[in-house]
Length: 119
Image 1 (tube, rainbow, N blue to C red):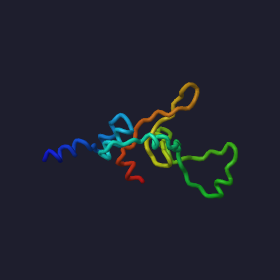
Image 2 (image 1 turned 135 degrees about the vertical axis):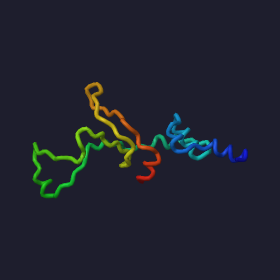
Image 3 (image 1 turned 90 degrees about the horizontal axis):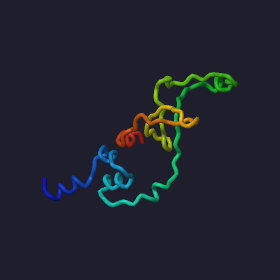
Image 4 (image 1 turned 90 degrees about the vertical axis):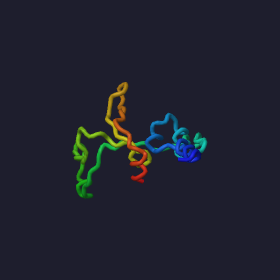
């Protein structure tokens, strides 16, 4: 490998290496190979949602629900919940109690590669 090619190879990180870097700016720099100022981007609001489960039902079944009705979801009780940002799955987690409020403990984070493939 030439010296020039070694410089390129060491300046750019793979997506797996990027995930282990400390800051968002480090990740952006490693992926682009350039100094990047992403402060404005980091201020963009996103929607975070936690998905407990899903189900399909007919409109008739939905209209027949009433107070006390139980709607069975496809997710099993011991399965981790989906954590989504702007609708994209980014992680899984479990519900925990945090100072008498619900909290969420992240159990695994979806790899950058898997997230990119799901878009």
